Image (cartoon, rainbow, N blue to C red; front, side, top):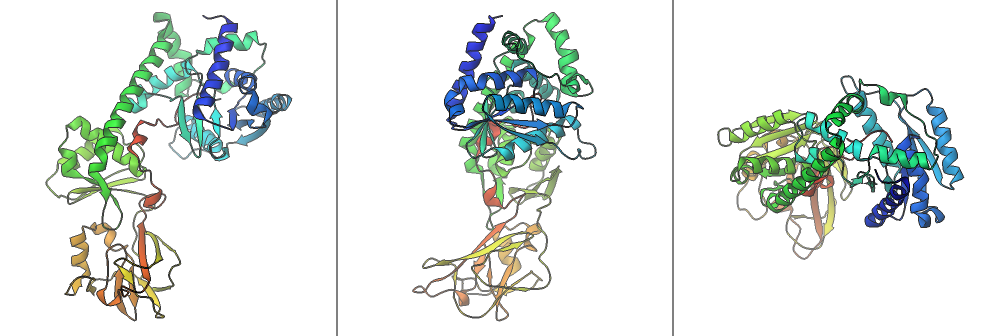
Length: 479
């Protein structure tokens, strides 16, 4: 092992280098009071003197509620922070995990949720996770049958809400951090919950890793190195998806995200799975398990244009004709209320199935004439007819929806716009020829944003690069 003085210099350089590479002008330290985070609290002000002098370095402490000494720990971390001239804020996990959910996973997610909500835009959160944490994470992911993205374990840098999550010490072992902390004569608190082997990570740390190290002394470092190779593989797959997915994914006539099935099936099966996962990530869906991928593949291989649906957690993937659609609970489409209501553009209207609004446009097609007659928004009842602008004949709305490829489960949720009892527009689909604004006059352009998840479609992620971003919330020990 390197000497404590040499390790100290390398730890300081890693802190300064990580913050400089991230371009962060504000930094928060995640400090629990344990050995590794206490060392972070001790060294960060030395590595980042400018941020310290500018008041841009602070401490965040999360009380996870498992230890009876937690008030003492919080006061101790606060005292050390104040002595160093750093700002301090204590956060506390409240509530309890839903029935059937892992306490360990729930606490981890809650801890990062609190930290993420506290970060200012562009602020970096420094955590003291180390090489042994990385090795444990790799094993946990392997035991969950994770693919390359999961086996990559924890990235050195990841997005966290509007800020960044930095892990500059992943190349240093717990023993190396302890050697420096001891040489610096630091005091810290040992969390008794870390000895509870009912938790998976603790079982690996207390039971499995000692056995591995007895036979293979460099096991932790070797496993962490394997995680780096998996990270490279994950990045290569993400790059391939970034090139290919734009040719397959798109939006239908009312703005729903789609994936073109024949184009997907033109690729090798392994690449199909990569693209499928990348598309789901682009839609904002949680990663499907192996069994769900198998069911999706069965759906893709079924008879041409056969309908079907696959669901997990709050995600629903449906097939219609040659497209896959990804939607979410509880924001699945629901029929509009039977009663019509008045609408005054350009005010936005939030509906269960999406958001409707209008903008004033001086030119362009599909603009509604401006007049004083009130507009009514109503649900589809069946039998509606409209003559779309640019067409000579009146057509049934059912036929137009079929022609536009609007999925059957979405049709009853579309708002219909009436004026003086006449259907004048179906937002996202067509405008009645008789209601179009003259070419030399301004008019209303309608906008319809269907709800596909927790937020409407425009708020969903839009880059296949999400495939290579390991979940910042899902890994690492308590800090």
